[in-house]
Length: 371
Image 1 (cartoon, rainbow, N blue to C red):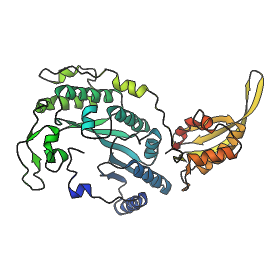
Image 2 (image 1 turned 30 degrees about the vertical axis):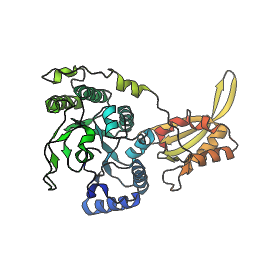
Image 3 (image 1 turned 180 degrees about the horizontal axis):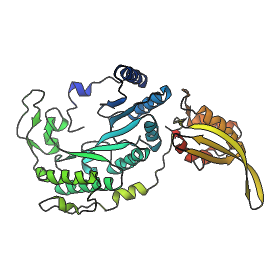
Image 4 (image 1 turned 180 degrees about the vertical axis):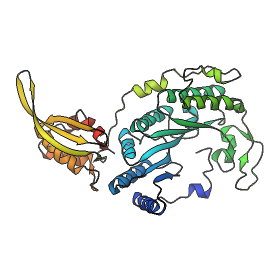
């Protein structure tokens, strides 16, 4: 982060741990304290490690709740979010920061507002609460960009894909990239840090930016209302006691992004798991225009519902065997390539047409996840 003290040893130097070790420690803490709620304090928990942790929790049948800090990466697909929820994940917090694509690129955040919206939708629809860290007053941020950022935030709340947030005003610190190279960000140092750990803030001047202090009250008051579902239809200028520019963000920008169907091309190495439970099958007959043919009906159980799909008899017999092997409790894990090879070995054709389309594609509701 270009505004965080990432040059300090205690931040830049860390030792990764395995999901197995994390689960060992969680189980020990539950026994020692009786507490089953966990907060992982990583700056940005890696999606791959979160996936492995979720699988380990489910396989050990540990009943816990947990939340962590993340970066809004596109790796947080619908299926990964559903897996995290099944393992006890109740919330995530991440840095949306300036909610402006220009400034997000300037700080090399590696995300866009559109990407954040899609990821938030995946978390929210899985039942995981999303909290966003917001920032205003970053070097060179204009009044127009501040208002446009507020509009982005308003629309995220209006769309129901953001449940909580907090505005932070940018502070230059001695060990951040901005503090180390202020000229790159067109700001001037007015003081130097005193050198002690807790006194590393630097007073600075931002000649090209807005009067950032003036926006503080209006940003925080509007956000408090948005979090309670209030005043989402207010004109943004009502939150400020001075003249502000009109937003340049289209009024349905976030809604339009979320309405677009997102197609994910899964890699052949992507693993498939069934988190739900396959329970039974039966033969049925389908009749259309005087013709009759044999079908197979497969039933799956989740914690909340029963799901049934109907497929051709031959494909149904293969699928019945495959979903048993795909059980999340099977440590082997079958890649998409493995599944395809099994399908074709059974003498079946058009794997992608069968696997990526209805009714099989709807089995994510029964816990069939592609990760």
